[in-house]
Image (tube, rainbow, N blue to C red; front, side, top):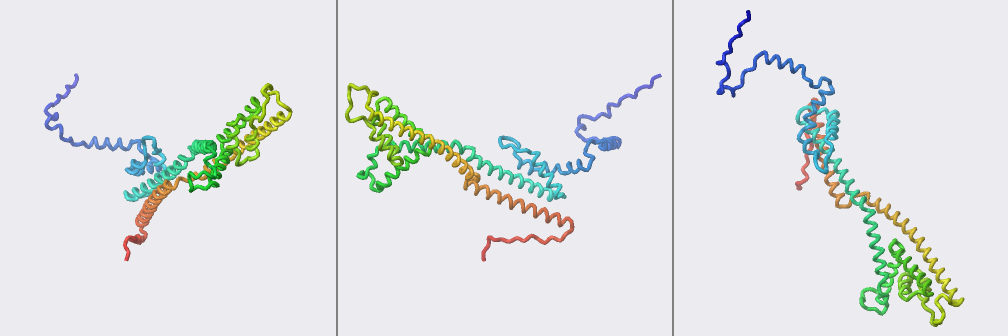
Length: 347
């Protein structure tokens, strides 16, 4: 005979009016909660407990704000946690104040690392573009010399008084500087080599150098290779020319003159080739020297970095000093009050 199930008393169910009130917890439920807590999967080792104990420091408001966790400047939050862990092992903070000072020290160290990173960026900003900048600058200098060399020489004559403030000697010196500059860069040396190649082409086809090329050679060589400039300047067409004779059918004396002139030009072409090798070596040495000069940031960036770093150092040392004083006081040591000197007032 089965037992009769007890009838449910629906009068004891909570009414809608009383459902908002908190029901009292029975003793049986309290004991069950305690047993569940003893079976918790929380840390049981000493190391685990120490790690959990520092969660409030690692994940505090300073950690949330100082570490950039998104965007192009994203930083590694775990690296900041490692710094905090090492500081906690060193200082063993007790209480909210000591823990906040440890956070302050960690943030100062983190921001000082940014200072070094900013310095690195300022240096790289110039070094990474140095090769391109130098190439453009050298090209500009070389082409300026080419353009300046091509000016009308009559502008630099002694009787030209267009500008009385500049002496004739200074004007000729400026032109000499342009001719020197032609030998220092690839563009200038290419221009000189092209002139000599055009002169050889004229000699091969006509037996002499055309007036236009002769003027350009004199203008480009007169201040650093006078003998060559004069030789090419007088290498024009012969004063008398036999119309019935072709340009290739010339006398022995003219053939010797032509061969000597070609040998002279070939010698200067070889010189241009040697100058190109020296120019490459010179540019490499200048690049290395300039790169070493750029190993420091520019003055304005250096000033900003140093001021920011000095500010962080003051914060760091102040936090370390406060933490040391608090810990000494906690250990019962006699700590004199800090010396505070106001330098803003004068007698």
